[in-house]
Image (cartoon, rainbow, N blue to C red; front, top):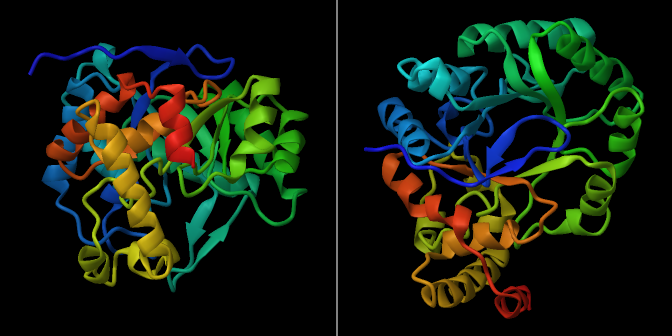
Length: 320
């Protein structure tokens, strides 16, 4: 397949020009961890990444936490045969770890972050990580000082090119920004998770912080492929089986929203999932959206959302 080109946007104050959609590697981290998506076919995951790159996607977002490095290893396998000059940007995240029982905890200790960085570099086969992000903050805001200072040091040392954060609120962003510039924030953002609109998006706009939104299709809920029957049959090692959004009474409300997305998207020959992504990208403060896939066909199902623009009346219709 001939590689296609997608329009790009500048991420914050960096020199990274990223496509409006990026490949999200959360789901390909395997099913053997608390927030896994069930058992995965690694060959299909590799094929999905390669299809995304062939279709023009120029960045991949993964994390150490996704299967304790499993996702990063799958990403490395997918990129192994791609010439360096054609390699997409690789973004990964640190600070979320798991104990022996599988329970997650956050560590922003400098030594821990450095160990994570070295591990990610090795698994990914990179000399430098394009964007290194704190995955989650701790409840103690003072921890951000040590953690963010460590990422700034890693950037100065050339181990990472740019640094960002994920899941931070405005107070945490302000704390970090006083220590070192923040390239980007990675928050959850979709039609059913809109809480960043009131304060966080305006703050990012004011301070030139790029925004790469995760779960624009609400972890598959807004794709158009989810049904009550499928939700009820999600395997026990798929975290969504324990998530309230996939259970009643929220499930019926969310699936009704999907039908509105289906109605609006059909006017343009677009799927509900593409329409949900386009809605997330409607705000110019959002630089890009992270979209997952576990096979090439899923990539083909959302790739055209990068260029899909909803009209103001359609945005209002969906929002209502």
